[in-house]
Image (cartoon, rainbow, N blue to C red):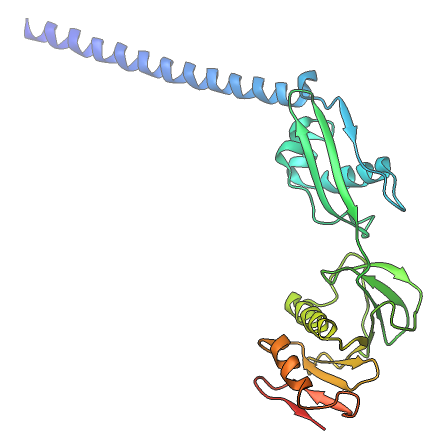
Length: 266
């Protein structure tokens, strides 16, 4: 009697174990089928195909050219290669690059993606010329306000455009920053803006050997002012206002701000 009871109980546990196995296995197959179905829907469904693209026409690049270049560049990513640029999720999930390699003169790239209308609208701007950098080995290039080199330009003279003369032998690449250290350009820019605000018009800039991290601003009808690339003098506007009450800028040959919290002039 007890042996029969034990056998019945053991068979029941085996049946329940097999039932659990088939439930788990069936659930896994169901989940796998759902995933495959979802992937097929994402990759092949006409409901996820972009119906309308739009992009701005900019000087030197039409909207179609901008769109084509951006598609090609973004398709190199893992997600881009998998989805393809005609899939609305390609634009919804992919991050836009900061620059278009083919058009370095374009920045501030953004998009407006509407899943319901399946439309993609691209926005972009032409970089604005802030100054010109001319290298020691020849060639001049346009700089934007962030220090990005974006176009070939002719050499210039005069004070209408700021010209930076670089004494270093190096290559300039379109779409790349002037310096590997972004703070260096920020320091140059903030110092120049402070000088101009105080009626000390910067007629030109010279980059010394980058090993020493120094640069010079030439003031129109005034001195040469020496700076370090590593910093802008603290409270520079106030320093300049105070200094103008003590010296005649038209009569001193140079002013030196290369040492923190120190001013030297002759």
